[in-house]
Image (cartoon, rainbow, N blue to C red; front, side, top):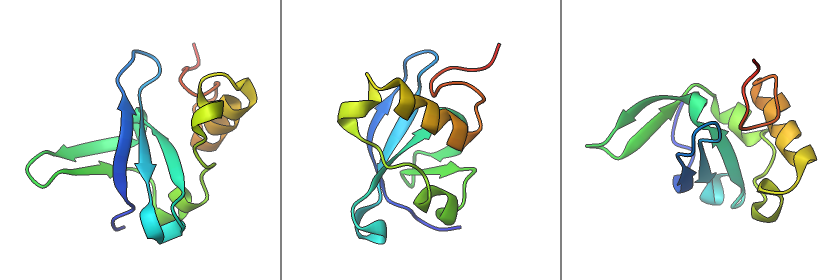
Length: 94
């Protein structure tokens, strides 16, 4: 339902693929982490990535914290719960 920002970082590690999106001034410079599973289309010509979340869902998403991402299990669980993966973020239920 519209542009949300620019991809600042990405990971393509198996089981832990994600995008970090810098929302810029749209929501005061907040960065959010989106699981790769939210990507539904990539348009390389227009340099756009389409996701299956609304602007409001992304606005309400937990803010990305670089220092917490790798080592904080609680943060990863919060992301997994928010995005409905049913497992700590980066993992999929068996």
